[in-house]
Image 1 (cartoon, rainbow, N blue to C red):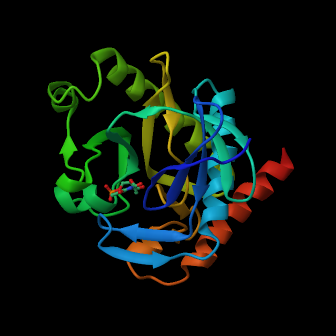
Image 2: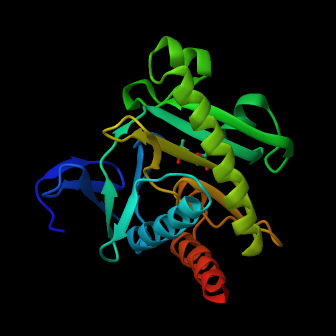
Length: 240
Ligand code: TMP
């Protein structure tokens, strides 16, 4: 499948058309941003890791009954995906308090929840991706009630499957962000990426951060953390 004209360039990926109107090619960059693009940098090798990790995890989720946009990995950085219209919601699932939850509600980072917490924000950079609830999402006509129910169900299913997978890699899945899209026939699939850019992943034994928080918080060891989390995933897959 050949790359045709560029359709879109985001903060971390480029998206290209192909000869098939229902298929696109995404190309993962090493560019990293945080705080709605205010902080900019490069994480060398990130594009390759995020491409491969996202693809491995989406293939797993497909087998576990969650439909995704994934079609085929084309190269280190490029993947063929189904064309979707993105539902403009960032769907966040949290198992442990961290990040904006800890800040907003004054809860110490690392405090576990009795059950997963699903949270939505409005995917709108001009507004700074504001937090919203499902009634807000309906008022803004971002999704139908049926779509919202399905998105919540899929998000919780993703959490259960990824939590178990990462536990077997000695990694704690703290929280993550998902995006969903609509195929041409209107059906909802998981889209975007699942990577250390979009998840908080802590070493189960030491609590060491193995994700993009090292970049957001200027902690150093960013490239090493991405390589370490990929190594954990790869060695797990080899054991299966
Ligand atoms: P938060 O605690 O900053 O709201 O982040 C929750 C999760 O969502 C965390 O795993 C990082 C991820 N995330 C993104 O993928 N993109 C974003 O723009 C933000 C703010 C968070």
